[in-house]
Length: 319
Length: 303
Image (cartoon, rainbow over all chains, first blue to last red; front, side, top):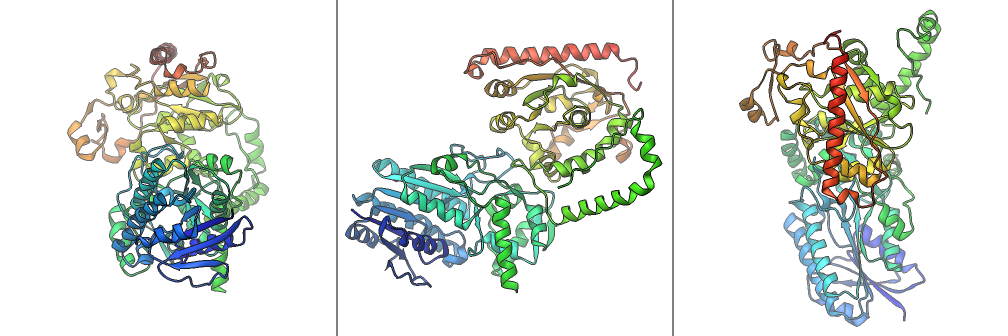
């Protein structure tokens, strides 16, 4: 029997990329893409279903097509992409709940791959230098994308308990960066003057988008149940990364940073949440050895190389 | 990346007169080297480890700033360096004193400058350090991290020399009258970390740091207002204002003692609280005895 994969969030960059990669794979017969808006670039081999995962319609799609693997890429990181924080939370949390409810009802579903985020670990002075998968956050995220990711992972764990026959793979990605992807981080590093918190220098980790997609692909093709940290090796200090961009840095005391961040986020420049600011203050580093040994794959780009690849794109676009 | 020359500046070293003699042709090369260093730093072209340790910044900037204190102000005499392994991991456990943790910095410098393998000491600090602006940033760049099991074990398994001061704030914030009396040694977490990684513990005694800021009182109300663990009153601080921050030039001795080996214990020894307490006591006792011995040998505080 051929394999049928359903990908959520295909109209956004990463979802679209993974759908494209999966359509080209000979092991997969059919890729069904789901999103609320049609993808900008049409994929000929992909069957697009315009549906909202917050709607029970999704269960019908799963059942009729005999989907065996669900790739949940539909967690949105920034309110700007979703049209407001309330909507974003709705899509992330309620959407995941609906999707998982549908999966639970569909006996053909045998595997679930969820794109999560390292932000579930929070960020703060009491953090260990490196997080392994079984560590609990010492500073639980209380807002934004990070909190949504925590809730999504909670529902995913619940689903894994109720459907023990489904192989559930949760990938906690460090900040994804590269030539194509746009995130709050790439916007931040593109600011002409980059604000930082005075007296702190965060340890940052990046994963190149190609490496990130490779891990998702491997999770779909193989069967690696579990939760995995995924990042490029090594770290960059925030100060070091800013020096590499060649942009100016302005350091603001903590109490001024938040109001400043809020004013530029309301100007539509960048989405600054408390979690984001904490990350830029204290940073966070993942121990990725479990993913590397389980998946048998080491990211091709280290953290500094992934950042370099992002900088290279910028130079091309300027020219 | 070219390695920078390490120029010994011991007075009795034959290199020094020669260096002064041919300073002229050398000066240009050194200036170029310095310029390249500055350029590379400004471009962000250097690497740090997963803990945020920036060896170049530590060795060339931070340690260079502390070196005059080590050589000329406290005139530190380090001994027992042969007890510190050349390549493998070890846990340096020392007494803590002197209001400001100069003792930690001096121990770090002793291992970097005087140990034959120029080892970096990776210290475990409290979360208060990493919460404080500037202090936390500098501590990370100097290679230090939070005192917690995962970090201690990770560093020790990587073969690093890890430094702990188990007395913590009780040690540096104790009154002058209690000098050289070891305080309680926490929960012995450091012993468990050494047992799990099978690395030796090196009990280390530091004499001299107690006299840098003789703390005659602790202004607890001020400390509480500022959210600090203690607020010292010394004969010069806060009386003389910033001048009172200058440490007294006491003469220092740092002795790295006989290692206590942890590899002969069974696999799950770290889960035996009695064994952990016993070992903790043994380390504490060895440091206390070495302190007494060093104090007996010392002729004067500022000698």
